[in-house]
Amino acid sequence: MRLLLTSDTHVPQRARSLPEELLAEVVRADVVIHAGDWVDVPTLDLLASRARRLIAVYGNNDGPTLRARLPEIAQADLGGLRFAVVHETGPAQGREKRCAERFPGVDVLVFGHSHIPWDSTASGGPRLLNPGSPTDRRRQPHRTFMTAEVSGGRLTEVTLRRLG
Image (cartoon, rainbow, N blue to C red; front, side):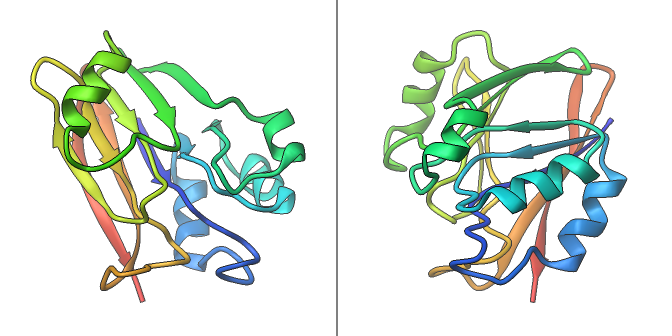
């Protein structure tokens, strides 16, 4: 099962549209996961229309229309792994411990908010993945998103994809 992970798209505030490379990966993915901060409804509609399956949450920059359509936290069983998606996880210091306590029984937690890519595993808890942002690199050298595979109940081939 091929996954595409993205977050913090901020269209049209940070970009006029989603990058073509990201959109090309949407159609290749079995599941698209978006960890919030869409900002506009047309971006949600675009991904929902192109993705085979979309798992998504709202972020702190998403208004009432997006919040009415999306949960704060999403959970799904994908290929034998329990995934959770949330926008914010708090400061980097103590993140693994905090997330393991907040999301017991979860194998993979996808989050956003910081625009800073993250890949770590909490002791006795979930693997934590932040794909960064495909439209707003902030203090990072590149705009980013992630792809991954789920096979045999394992998460494999997690790849940070750089744009621009």
